[in-house]
Length: 219
Image (cartoon, rainbow, N blue to C red; front, side, top):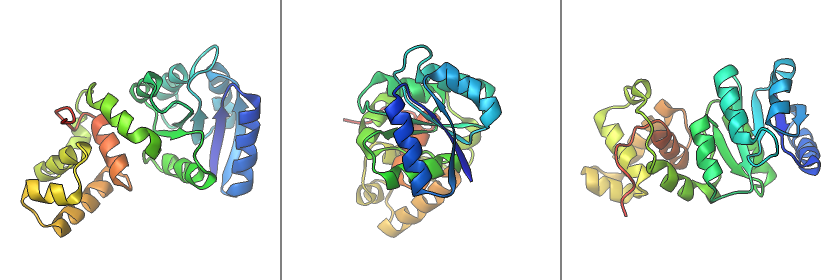
């Protein structure tokens, strides 16, 4: 059972999400509703959520501030940003604050449930509508390298990840690395496993978020 706390300043959104999640997946339990970040933090000790669905722009304590508090004080709780902003600096701020996933509010029910499941499992779900812009922003603000994560990857795997974050296809990666496309696919499968992700978008965002890529995306 995945326990979910919903944080959004709009009551209709909170109630709507609770109804959707309760009816769509029996393995998801909505354990609390919060109207801002401060209320969400107050509810966490009692409700013990696995995932907080976090809006960004809220009065009082906003979603970025709340995410930072959760990261610092409740690291066992995962934060899935659920926002209407697909090109907003707040999304990048949420990355720096420690959010685990990023979805848009117009995502369909299946995608939202899958994102919650991925977030609870420690993966990084990214809405396709925000992925490209997210790459652009994160690549311009490379954080300190996560050596523990980098050590999981071989030099060739790190090279592949760098090309992946630059948007190259398997064919283009194969040509640049002098490999067959089949070998590239095998490398990708291994990289996904080591990073704990399930697709190219998640791998690229994790690599950028944890400083595995040393240069900006090429024009």
